[in-house]
Every structure is written in structure tokens, then in C-alpha cells.
Image (cartoon, rainbow, N blue to C red; front, side, top):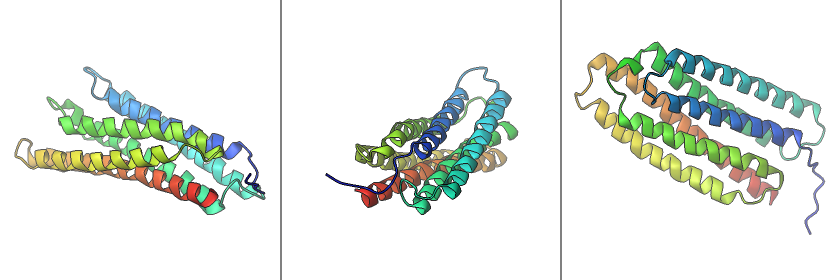
Length: 208
């Protein structure tokens, strides 16, 4: 039987879980953009509210690290995981913000691939939210990081298809520039989810 001097205090795991649940809220809001007659400004404003809540969670996490003598696992890994979860939320908010500010949802239709990318992000968010509570036991996490990495590869494939569509002549040059910026944020969010999964894998290996 393995014995550990590390505490099993739940505050860190609760903060990680709350941060990941906000990512699910973020991707659900982005999915609303596919609905007919959606209020894009409302979606963007609610995303900003979720992003602010995530910032607050990150600050709480950093305060907790600085006031805890012995942490459940390495301080550097706690900082990194908290920071990476916050990075994902920043990218999700940027997607909604750009779509609203650039007026892209006023187009006859957004590219199908854009909605497919949001669907991939939604799957990654839900996997991440399910995985965070399991950090406490460090069990049953391998399927999470394997599937999250698979989804990142799927996101790369969809992003390439999106770029092909953007440069096919279907859209005017200014619209292409705007949507390329949105595509970059979608890809960055997908990559950021993979970075979270890779960090969880690193932590699990260290603690096994």
C-alpha cells in the first residue's frame, strides 16, 4: 500500500473543477451562436462574465498555493494547471468577442467547419470537467488525456478544412481576414485543452 506525506485537502481540486466547469459553460455559449436568431451580443457578454469568474478562480488558486505549507502535488504543477485552464477560457471568450465585434454572425451562414470546431471544443471541455475531480485519487485519467489529444488532432484537421474554405474565393478579402482571426483563436483553444491534458498526464506520472 502506497503511503504519501502529501495532504488530500480538497480546496485545490474544487478550484480546478470549478475552472473546468466554466470551460463547459463557455463552449455551450459558443454553441448558441449556431442557433437561428441568436442574440450575439448577449452571448459575448455572458462569455465575458464566465471569463471574469475564471480569472477570480485562478486568483483564489494562487492565493491558496501561497498560503499552504504542503500542497497535494508540486506547486509548479498546480500553478501550471491553473494557468492553462485560464488560458483556454481566454481563447473561448476571444472567439465570441471577435464574432460579435466583427459582425460575422450577420453573414448568410458561418462556415460549417467553424461550428465543427466549436463541437470539438465542447467535447474537450466536458472531458476536462469530468477529469478534474479524479485528480484527487489520480485514477482513471489515462482515457481522458488520450481522448483529449485525439480531439486536438481532429481539431487540426477541421481547422485545415476551414482555412481551405476561407481561401477558396467564397468570401471577400476583409471577411477572410476577420474569420482567419477567429479560426486562430479556435485552434489556440483546442491546443490549450491538449496542454491541460498533457499537464494532467505529467502530474499523474509523477504521483504514481
